[in-house]
Image 1 (tube, rainbow, N blue to C red):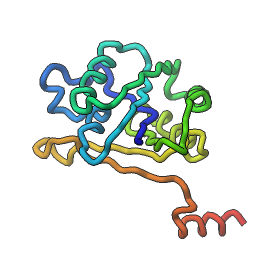
Image 2 (image 1 turned 135 degrees about the vertical axis):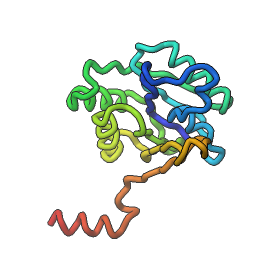
Image 3 (image 1 turned 90 degrees about the vertical axis):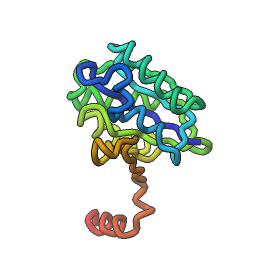
Image 4 (image 1 turned 60 degrees about the vertical axis):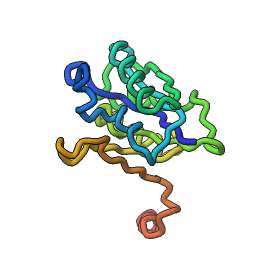
Length: 173
């Protein structure tokens, strides 16, 4: 089972419209265009200010991945660049989220959102408040190439990386 906890998408000013939206790389929708990454549920964090954009993203995900359940969550930051506010809000979300890492695999998408949001998601995942691995997507290398681009999954469990764990232990002595 693969579940992604968080993602935000295009700002209202940059979003592609009409049929041309399928020619543009949209990080949230593109994730579901990878045949080797099956997602059962997407918990989609958004700010609640763009309901038509949310509907379009959800509808497009269902076009490319009809079996995926999309669960929208409104997290409206007053200032998405305020580290304290963002961290506290995301920590509250993580603490109330009914995660079950014994039966579900979680991927936390850090592709979109402000740099502060991305850093806070990294920190919350590293501290295991969000029990999963990080997911980073990237656009196609060229417009001619097209397609959904690429993705990378990063496991922050340092016990899996002996050389890094050894260096960390040496420096903390």
